[in-house]
Image (cartoon, rainbow, N blue to C red; front, side):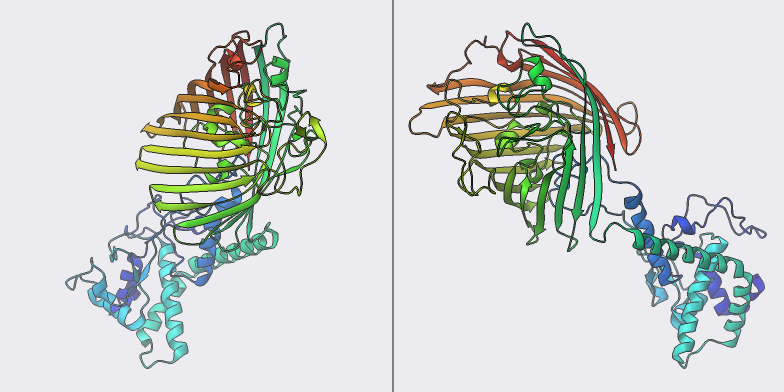
Length: 639
């Protein structure tokens, strides 16, 4: 073969061309350095290099460009991005970045850049023995390319497949010249050299064609069977065993229960920058209006209404078995629409969102690493600052209709805000009473007339290792509740005041995460909720406070595994005014504390198992209650 390459300067140019053709990563289906393929090393000029691959997409044909695109998409087809949710831990959480981004992004690729002059190549000098040959190929045929950094790397050894790819590129260029009948046609010597080379590499060229045909067939199959050109489907399945001991005095320990939650999420984009999120879910937690069938009620730690309790797990809805808008029951494993939200950019730094089933956590970036209903902390207390949970802000059922904005002031600083209305779909409040002063539509009616919330979060990152979020929320409630689902005193927030008393709430909080190293982070939050009666006939107020601090570990003992240890104080009344009571009648007031530990074992890319437990001291702020332990064994499947 060498004698044909040396027959002319142009022939030598082809050798120089192929010797440098290795600029980017190859498609796995077009692997060059295959250990099962014998490389011709008769003259010792080729060396095996199994770690290096070459991308032929730029030079062999437009078919390989298609193949490259299909290959880049295979990971997103075969494996769903893990450990994410649709705002409330359902498989996708695209709110984590300050600027919403595409669900998948490829790493930077190295692409060949067309060379129009040899002087563009910084590592090719006029004194080089191959300079004239390269110059001839560039000026006469234009069928070589260099790296983006203006280098050619002509001393690198190549494989026969790479040589065949470069040869194919020049054949196509020569065919173009012949087709256009230019005056500077290919010389007879060049054609003779090309003919010999084509014969020498006939097997390799045929292999390349076969592989491209296989990719085309695979592409056609994917296009024919794809779910949608605009929509991605992912999901999360949680199956967990829960056991508990302790609770109210004279109550027996409840049986171990087996529960589930299933979520299917559809993320649709019409422009490539917007997202329409549709989420369906089903669960078998029970509770209803009076808490019957819930673990918290069996422990004696639940409120007499709506089963609010500090013994609640992270993946349990705030109002299990109940449509709180109308106080109607929801059967176990009934399919519900828990998420419907549209997000769209309107300017470079401004994004808007609106939906009829949304939650505060959908709009605000999560600061603490303990958040993750199916992956991280096992208690409702640990995952989020209580300010985000006020007014059903994270009910797990998409309680409110909401609209808001995301303003990215800078890459390290952004402001977000929303307005949410709970019963925006009801034209008027029901006249029927479920309790004295409490309608069967207890949260009111109308977009601006019923229970509502205005919430905002300022997020900034003063350094790569430090994340800080500051929250404020102003709420109006038709009835006497906080609607956080965190403690039993959530119901009857103004103790000693009628259940039908409307409230105004002003809530402030902050969350901080400090990454000591890539694998260890300190995180904590503090919150205060100021509650006032909104009725002119009632003078009452109270203040709730809460805090948490903990350590989070990544890749503990094995890559992909995480763990957390945390301690804090659940919501607790610290002050009252007017007719409000500091402690409910019959309680022995004591500060409650929460201690939790968990370890998530990543079994595979799509399966994780999380054993964990949390201990409640003075549960519900009442020392009459026994120290309570809740153990959880949670298995999470993502797809």
